[in-house]
Length: 396
Image (tube, rainbow, N blue to C red):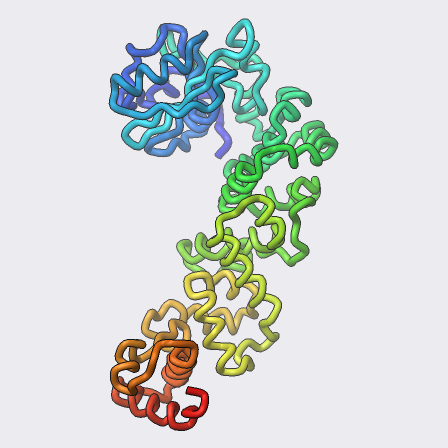
């Protein structure tokens, strides 16, 4: 991913293809410049089809964003009224527009987080890259270096964002920057919880997450929310397809890194907290030989995890991994994808049952019978339901 040499500004502009942007350049002030991630990713030739764009203008960023939204049919989101920052959302694109921070563009770039993010590309006039901090050299040499120590503490989320970049781009952490991160790690708790979790979710999904997580743990950045569990790595996914790896690793890593209480403190969604909690519970309950689980627990495992089963499979021995992956890939496997052979409405009609907990128990019983091959058809299921209700008629 490292560049063999710095491509000229004209090549970077061609990669960015501003003619495809939903925002005509002639509607921007003559002094408007593109900064941050889009410039960095264009230099690395890793731009997304619709990159997030960050623009800096001399003044009036909020008013400009509102005007553009009205004229182009987009929406304006105020990001920071005091600092004059807003977001233009337009036809699937996101364009952040901010007032220049400081007396000059160079002063603005000196206040950014990392050198590789402090490179600017003017959008009018001759193509040139403005790089007052040495970001181009860092990109070429593969270093992640903070512009200044104080810049990291101005927004403590920057401490974590640097490691997230390392999960996406092959970078080595500058030793002095690492020292600053460790020194100020406790300040990360001052950042908005939702922003911390968003950065972590991007980090654990990165192609180079193993190295970034190693640094994350060494620097103790997430100690206030940390879980104490073995961390899965890419090596554990050797038998998985790329899609399966993308399903399994991020969830397994997040579960290993952040405790249930930590996820709640970071305001993770209810669905995410439930997924991590269930995975953690089964990771702890699973015996060395998973095939020895009692039938009822085995069915419950597959009901609980379903699409997240690959994250549990990571901890199995290779032979069990092979078997479980093959069965999980088969959507018709009655154990790995348990379902009742008849629905509750049919059972109520056929057996004159009322809805309630016991009906749920019957459905679970039929799932288990089907999962272990003791029911072959719908008629088998109805007959077994009759037998079960007779055996349990006092409870019903």
